[in-house]
Length: 221
Image 1 (cartoon, helix red, strand yellow):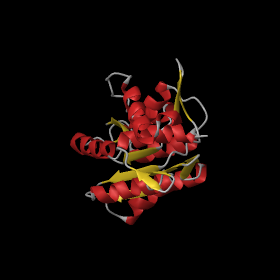
Image 2 (image 1 turned 120 degrees about the vertical axis):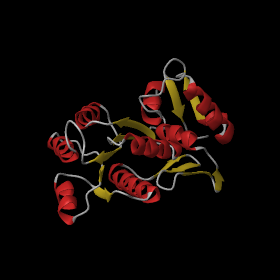
Image 3 (image 1 turned 60 degrees about the horizontal axis):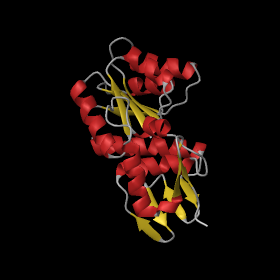
Image 4 (image 1 turned 90 degrees about the horizontal axis):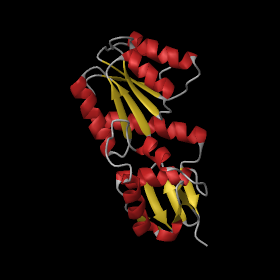
């Protein structure tokens, strides 16, 4: 899952991004409303965390512009304001949820997960099955038959991308786009490292390599 945080308080934005990355999400961060609107228009994000008071363009206008363009990405609005009219205005412009500062990080993560689950239910089943392998995207758990397999957050994120397109070849650039944020400047071969780890834990035969193209998750015979 790839998230975008549009928040001009740089310390808060960095803290939120670090926490959400530790949860296994790829997170991009910008500090200006216009830049946030541009990125949200050009990139297929799974969720936006959008502050209201922003330079360039406020969160209300960003949200309204996205909805007017037909973009239905879930939007969680953040604001230092506190009042029912502020909340109503945010929801009226098309936001899906609203959180007032200061807030608990635990609550924010719970809201993010709830919005992603809601989106997942409308787009696809939250549990993905590939043979005897089951990937529960809502609970973020993986099972081989009746046995649970412990994965790191990044391992789960890579597996989820493969499971959502089981039987198809998924290229490294596609995996990178959903699992690592745009600021990542490391070796793109990092994908191979996580695929190797998944093969060790799940069985090498489950993830095939399509040379020069990517990887394919298949059901076992």
